Image (cartoon, rainbow, N blue to C red; front, side):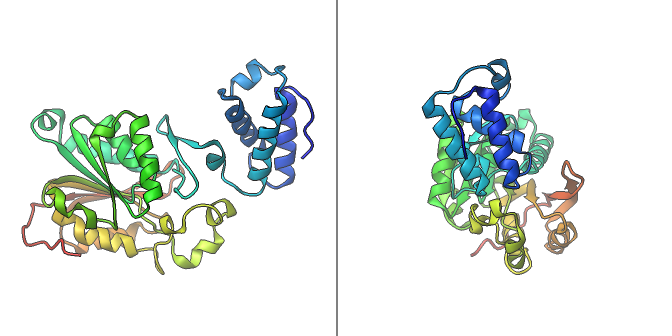
Length: 309
């Protein structure tokens, strides 16, 4: 990519042209995000200061990012941040990049938590939330940020993801309200007295069928962690595990909230119904009109429900 001494607008045009030639969608937006990251500006500043000439170091950095983006490296990995619910979260390679659709999961979980456990109740007891497969921590940390009187237990099998989540908790000022644990689903929670004492279980589990992974965009299949995507042969492996064990952790009136694939609503709802543990099961659509989140309210707690591995 040729990029000689130029101002902001010239750099944007060159980056846009190069990305367009390489088949990158929304090349102008991508060029803006990358240049703003290099200059540590907001995107609007690129136009306010459009005649500012870039230094050789800035041009070199920008050029390297544009080339990496043209090769399919996701923008969020290049900039190191991703906006989620108007907050900038740190993301790094090896951690799933937050999607806008996941905001629906957080919004629904917060709505139900406020309904089931209003502020006056939260003043009397800590509201325990389990975030399974926490990744960068965006779900649990967002809940901790927006819900007073709660404590979030974020679980992930990846130490790298937990390191990123820890940095995000610090960044958002909620580290004291978040406990991060390494392990598979509920397994590391045994020593925290959460069985029958959890007010919400939330998760964006791996739900893409194994056979469909190769058909994903190259930005996803070539760069994002497969363990955060692969939901087994039918995409339902983790839903089955979570739905079978969540009732033993939830209090009466507790919430199960899961992100789902666009065509998985009926199957996941059937799993929740067959468990005989949930009422008011609802499927919520995302901003594009696709099924994206399913929620249910726990029936009266039954001590005989197993929480064994």
